[in-house]
Image 1 (tube, rainbow, N blue to C red):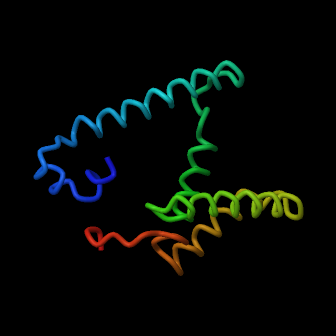
Image 2: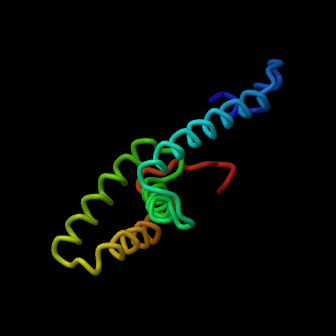
Length: 123
């Protein structure tokens, strides 16, 4: 699967069809998300704006860490948690704004994120 994502033309030249493999990986991810959603729905209840806070936090973490970097996302999640906690301790109204301010600063000085990988096809 990793080879198919990195160089799909080479994988096709070797006679391997990458489309069914990527579809299977997508299906497994959707299935795991469905299981997680049904398990958490029994604990928290279901409402229209259920995951907005989580989705926006995950977006900020992905942007901070950089696309294609696992350790960048881990570091960004830790940094965001610490920043939000410290800000909530000293200036509670600014806790939510602080993560967006950090995201803006990172995007100004490092548009690929803190540990982002440079993709030749995109730049």
